[in-house]
Image 1: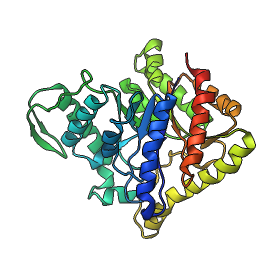
Image 2: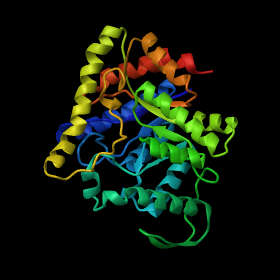
Image 3: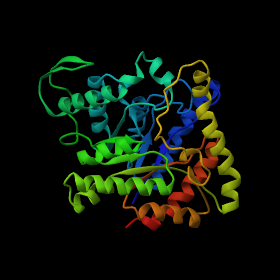
Image 4: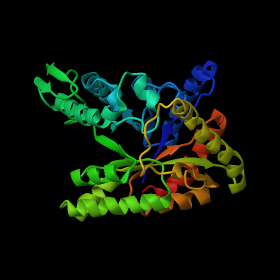
Length: 345
């Protein structure tokens, strides 16, 4: 099983943004030293819940300091980017990390309407923009000069330079937060990144994914291979004892979830909101489901339950909301020294 750290640093005070960004780079370097397989980057804007905001710029900086772990995006809000600019940036990053890149793409936020408003994008177009942009990017990485006449972009593209380091291009993976998106990926024979869910929901969705791939004509080897390169997201806090983990981790987690809703609720009160979809899960706010916490032995039990589903990797968030960098670093270290080795090799 593969293990990673998800850089999702929350800054409530604009005056502290620079300090939190510096600490985020330190977390990435620590995770790399501890043997993390991937360092994942998020994309959120305007509210400080992922304070560095632009994952492409941070990835360029980390390419020089993360020597062993890969870099991944979970996810790029694709509707907010021009696809040719994004294809260029990813091709360059692919060279800088010598192929250690996972390109996670998503439609954009399912909740935060201001992410779209700030870039002048209609959130109703986000899914269609994602689909069109991905097709353009793959064509730019793999073909010579081409023209594109689509709904959102009309392009005449000479050969993209640089060409990607990876052949034919870095792996592209989609985020999935609903049954419908998971079914679509399964029918296409594509792996997935699943957002924070309860174990029960995750297990049910993995079963759905397996069934759908079988119905689409894929064999068991192909299904297992896809699951082996799929990822699920979990929040962690590891301490020397279960009691210590609960005392520190739970309040930080609860503060984090309420802070993430704060600006969204303010916009909703003004009548500006993305209409919630009925099948979006509530598990990310449920104690014991959204957060895995405890001493290493207890955390390992929860990881083992995920491992039994056949999923290849866990995207782990260790710095929870307002948590001090030092506390997150201790949790991260305990996880990679005491938990991760039980599931490797």
